[in-house]
Image (tube, rainbow, N blue to C red; front, side):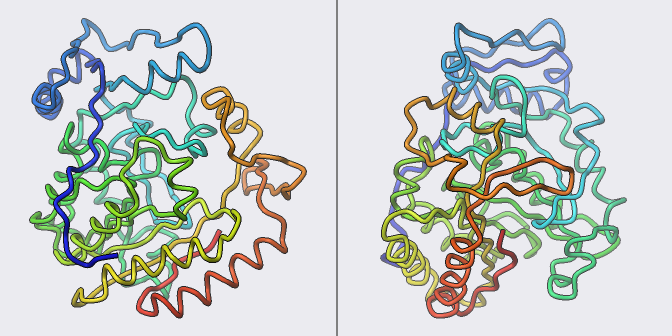
Length: 364
């Protein structure tokens, strides 16, 4: 992996249709989103007469999926969406700038989390969303209460239900949030976090982030990324984006997810780590973290994903998994204990050898 920046056109999503609710269109940020969509070449921008989105149901699940994935909705986030929620083990609080993602990842974690057609919704009342952050500073239970991660301050995760960088050229919401976190007079230390599979980081590089934002790049073995992560930036582009962000003073991270024991997985993930190491080798004052997330699924997410991707080669066989219950009683299927132990042991050793400057935040 070369450490010089190559001139590569970033991967950008252009929706076929943009639906804007009446209330969203009347807000300044909503008007900005409309202008950005028009500038991006969206021919069909429909400002609705009311605040209810039309049905996006089609003849079957696959057709509904395709229609929804081509559509962007600009809406006003209701109070329930503005109410910040804990999001362990990633961060103290979840802050949602949008809901839904334009990517076509065949293991999509949103499949079991969001109901209805997977339309991407972006929020026009951004100032209201950002205003909710102040009262949560100092009151988290993940980084705020952790001796190991206390330096991060109270952390806010903005990619729980979306990939905010994938939408940035259409919304500007991420840049506004980064600048707000970097310049606002907070009652205590804070940190903004998001993860992305996209590479259009140029709009972020010169923002006044004040070192308060950590951008994690989602990466994987070549076989996993090439087969299962449609519509996203290629791995070399993502790794180049990581380098550029680090060079511009951002705290950065790797989200290695979802880890899968594919054939020759040690060689595949080893190659990935070596590419990252080469890309950041000469970056001064590098602050790099790693989060490792193994593949898992639920009965609900499996059914949804098979409806979206009926020909997928993604392994979702309950016979080869262990059933695990979450704290709210939901069952998910994870790798068996022996496989998890082997994966975790290898990653711990490989990271210590190839990326000794990196801090692993968690394994799950």
